[in-house]
Image (cartoon, rainbow, N blue to C red):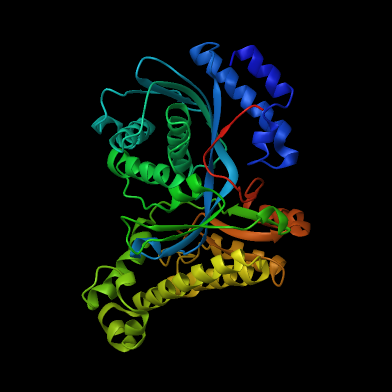
Amino acid sequence: MAFSSLKEKLNAGAYEKSMRRIYAADDLARQSERYFSLAEDFAALYGEREGLRFFSAPGRTEIGGNHTDHNHGKVLAASINLDAVAAAAKNDENVIRVKSRGYSKTDIVDLAKLEPVAEETGHSASLIRGVAARLKELGWQIGGIDAATVSEVLSGSGLSSSAAFEVLIGTIINYMYNDGKISPVVIAQTAQYAENVFFGKPCGLMDQTACSVGSFVAIDFADPAAPVITPVAFDFAACGHSLCIVDTRASHADLTDDYAAIRGEMEAVAEIFGKKCLREVEPETVYENLDMIRKKVGERAVLRAMHFYAENSRVDREAAALSAGDFDAFKKLVIESGFSSYMYNQNVFSPKFPAQQPVALALAVSECILAGKGAWRVHGGGFAGTIQAFVPNDLVAEYKEALEKVFGEGACYILSIRPLGGAEITAE
């Protein structure tokens, strides 16, 4: 599509029907402006080209299954309305070029070289190369692409900005060279492969799956090489609530040992029974041997094992509640999950810094406002960072004001669950 024609179509609302699949009706005008601004970025970088197309991939939020995936447990996650978007066109040079707004460097990946490059480890170019390499290895078509991207997925917020970027690259290749035939699950697995093998981060599959598949999704990691992924049908837009993520703006520095201890202590319990992870040990076996276990690995390890088993069960019940349209039951389970993380998993504040408890404070303020009405829990890794709350729409303004009075302006992000994962945005 010529640049002038694209501008006319955006102004005329030709993309609105496609945008309505993923954006709220009152956000369509802003999104049209955002996409046109991105098209201008593309034109400045690569010239006004024919065949310019738009793509989107969302961030994600963990709903249930806090600290369960690393011991082969179950997780409930969902895509959110914040996304990474791209304006892209084919080139005939067998090279992928990606320039992201806010970053000085254009990533340039020669598709003739599809092995990991040491100098790219930890950088976005490795993700592009890894996605392309894996898709080709799986028998899919790849080819030259020029792209400009911009993201509203908050970096460092636990909403998975890196997974959104990986899925975005896979989505572009899917629609440009494979007519959209690659399944969202394959794109998610490809994105995880790129992050593990090319980027150098041994992440799980939860983030990429939620970003790629979209809406609510339950994931069972009993076999990490072949996780069972089950979409959960629920119309979040009709439930009368908003999803709020509150950034307590606390530093994650010096918390690596705290995060590692959760996995390590869960695995230490499993090791007592000759297993590598808790999923391989029946919960009854642990409950029947609590005294022996605590004497060997300590009471905190026992409590974290109890959290693991309760969270695994809770994920199934949360998914069932959503599938049945019972949002009240779902909220009760979210609160249960939060208390389990607080009391048993103990990842709400670090024992190394007992005077610093911003996440605990955010949860306490949330309870004051939402008790009997909404739901609240720690979000992601814990110890510092963010909490999650499901807030009735008529309380959103009050909730946001109260939390930002404590943690500063802009600390509370009002989100929604996006019904679709990676997608092409097309004109009608």
